[in-house]
Amino acid sequence: MSMFRDITIGQYLSGSSVVHRLDPRTKITIVGVFMVVLFTAASATAYGVLIAFTALAVALAHVPTGMLFRGLRPILFLLLLTFVLQLFLTRGRVLFELGPLVATWEGLRLGVFMVLRLLLLLVVASLLTLTTSPVSLTDGLEAILAPFGVVGVPAHELAMMMTIALRFIPTLMEEADKIMKAQMARGADFETGNPLRRVRSLVPLLVPLFVSAFRRADELATAMESRCYRGGTKRTRLNRLKAGALDALAAAATAVMALVVIGLRWWPFR
Amino acid sequence: MSIETRDLTHVYMSGTPRAIAAVDGISLRIEDGEAVGIVGPTGSGKSTLVQHFNGLLRPTSGHVLVDDTDLWGAGAAGRGRGRRVDLRGVRRKVGLIFQFPEHQLFEETVLADVSFGPRNLGLPAAEIKDRVAEALRIVGLGADGAEGIGRRSPFGLSGGQMRRVAIAGVLAMRPSTLVLDEPTAGLDPRGRAGLLDTLADLHHKLGLTLVVVSHNMEDLAFLVDRVIVLDKGKIVGDGPTREVFSRPDRLRSLGLDAPPVVGLMHALAARGAKVRTDLLYPEEAVAEIMRWLGTRAKGRRGRRPSGGARGKDGAGEGGDGASVHV
Image (cartoon, rainbow over all chains, first blue to last red; front, side, top):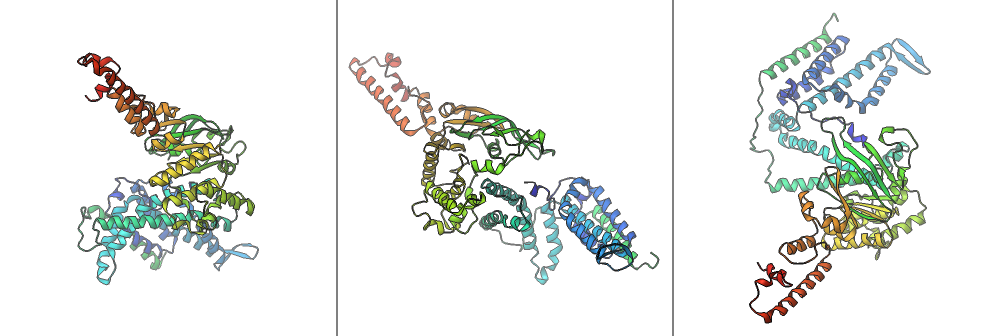
């Protein structure tokens, strides 16, 4: 079903680019910093810097842009809605009127910024998963969360949960595809009818899918226990994360970008 | 229903480096009322092939004809052109039962689940009730039918019962062709025997066309008259069941096997026993081996008075018996 083919979030494209070779901790931190900085951006110049930074990262990662933008398709509607709401609900100088609705210059500006913000957020997040294998992603996350263990954050467990969730995405998609076909063979129709009907038509898909997910979870838990899995305490690992010169460079570039964008916000002569 | 494919090809992930032709130029015709088995090693394209039979998959190229109607009009080349065939109508007539069909159950009661198909057809309530009762009876859950098992949750049944309920769900559509993917996988011997009997009845008594995908050669020997062998998306064998199974060496080279009876008869023949090797069923084999033992015993008895001439007699009537002991 084409329905499942467009989802690229969470996919990993193996490669050996500069971005692929970065330490996952570096990449996760950069994405975190980028997100915070993104929300302080309030001028065209600031957005320009952010776009340039993102474009540079995409170019260095050698990820096909088609693949990157295909993942954006599902949120097109959200982007459009955000833009329209900002355009009409912001007060200011009148741009044009549409019946009772008044579009403003300030709304246009805000709308464009909001759409850019969402787009950049999504591109950077997809870039992270596209260039980082699920295993190193969770390793990185675990390493970052580990210090919070002293205040009771179960870092290892959270990372393990994420690994398992990522591991089962393709499996469950395959399962969903199979169940969907089986119900279609019984005359089910997933594609036509009003929204309510279409939501109801998902019941024959979702119930078996949940049943099988629980079954798989149960089997996996048994398999892990039978191999003596014991959570995070005192586990050692085969491949230890190692940050290098490349990571320092990336961190420095990110710091510069962050300072410029934040600086632009309080810069008196923008 | 007759099902025909012409030069059918299905490519997964086309346009990517990982593109693979699961079905590669298959042309076949299954006549109305036939019982056909499809065998092949894992990944040979069996499941992909049968999903074309009711229009669940659209061919990358080539044609699928059900009752001589082309499901995809001008074929893959003419996407969007031509009149659209009513695929739901086709799916009603060609019932497809996937591997582990019990995984598709979702309703609160058995009755509700079996009636899902007929309800999708928009039938009147009375007709739905009839069909559900009939379908449950066919799969052998009719004895305590509506009041007993019908009101129970399908998730509380045994594996074999769940599978029967799932199959009833397809039968309630009253298909004229039944396509089954590994119908007996994972069933216990009693469940398997019961299901095979049900399927044989559907074919022989109700005249349904059967297409059975299976790794279990005994099941196929019992159910079908014709076997199609697939390997790497292509047909590498097609003929009467007895003929296809009479060449176990060829099947073995594909990682498959013939029914155990065929193996036994070939092993006996290889050791010099003069027995037929084209037998499929234990009953036949027993009769044949008894016949051969009879001739062997007769040969011995006839020979005994003559005494010492054993070595020379090797080529005689009883010779085959002697060589078995070598």
